[in-house]
Image (cartoon, rainbow, N blue to C red):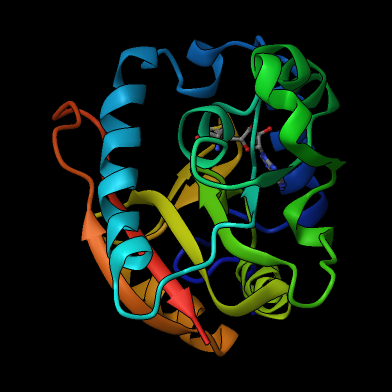
Length: 227
Ligand SMILES: C[S@@+](CC[C@H](N)C(=O)[O-])C[C@H]1O[C@@H](n2cnc3c(N)ncnc32)[C@H](O)[C@@H]1O
């Protein structure tokens, strides 16, 4: 069985993860580093995320705003601009310790409302039961094999409070599954993503495209999953 459905080029799990870690260790702990030179799209991205979350914050079954988890958090861009302004406490999980170290400075005074900085690959993450109202997973799932992606989502399911949601915000390939051999990640098409979501046992609650991104970039979708 292949590690990533539709991508025969990834044959060694160890190499896939080691190469990604080496890549991210070589990237500066800056906003531009997080966004591959597209620092200027951060505000467009965050506005799209805020508008997506409005449905869950203002809807009939309002999501509580106590604790959120930022997955593949980098230096904490999403935590600073999206999650800390909304939630009382935010935890960050990130595989590269240097980014987490920088997050403590980058988040400024609001860093006092960070609960935990967890240095861990999402493939190894274990969450405590019913802890989070929102688990935000942005531009990182391409670093997981299919099996680890499903297991990670099952951990999220376990870690969600009643009424909580997981949001996957990621690049989507028009066709097939594309390997980026530089950062050792894949971009899945929407069918492959949906198969993984379904295999996790989480329900797809809502899906929306991110608008106003530069044309040369991948299409980006936000998918909310819940029990
Ligand atoms: C493109 S950056 C996105 C950072 C952040 N989510 C954002 O949108 O600003 C990808 C991040 O995922 C982290 N990462 C890569 N592989 C990971 C893994 N297996 N587990 C956790 N984090 C990982 C990288 O170190 C990097 O910080």
